Length: 326
Image (cartoon, rainbow, N blue to C red; front, side, top):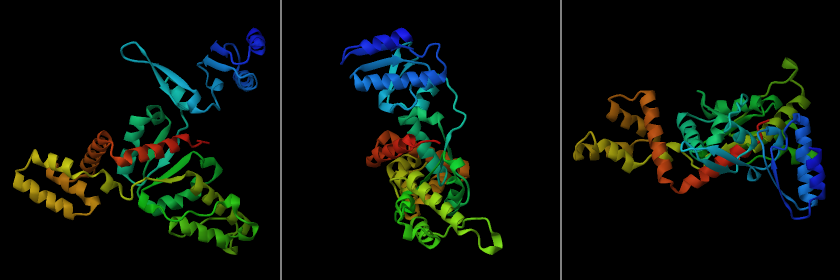
């Protein structure tokens, strides 16, 4: 290591430096110091430094654009993957992530969409995020942000359908002192959520502590502005439904006349009920599992088509991928 440092100190400006696992024999703290040294020499002496490593400490803090992952293919060749963050890079070589980010979505269809597109576009990220939905609807999701906004729950992210987007609230870190009060924050929370949100503070029947309430409200708004996102579609059921694809499924089991009649019935139904009607035709019942399997089928078809909204969705999921987990 000493010899390497000496040579780097003497390297001519503009040199290309190749290092093979420079962290060898160094403990994690020393590895981080070595990385800082390499970054400093790269900047001050205009060096291009390329190094291989198996240590997360050696690339912690580097932007995804600086990280390349070499993976073996089934044919015994190497494939290079670019723009991986630190966790993604090391999942691909066998590291286990036990503390995943949690993405809360509205329903099964939203979960299927996020999982399938992430798996297609960001395969390493699939191992770093747990996508969840619970009964209770969007109102309950907004109430639960009172818990997620606590510091210990910073790994949570909330993703709503586009029709839940309302007005953007004030950034609590930019609010003037005269507006830093319960009434103003209550109004801002209703502005973005469309509903009142109840906070619990010390004090109980005595009315609670106003200063504590302000802290909780600010945490809520801070979480909302930083970790609440929205699908680029108002209604997922409408975006991922495809009449031509539906007609193809029906044509395999019905006559042309029956297919036309059923398509007319489906067209008249609300978007949320179309999958249930099709499931009833295909499986003679519309159990939740049958509807979910159909939704997965339609989402996969949508991904293969790559419609206009696909790139928007990929951009959204890329932004989620880049959010800090802690």
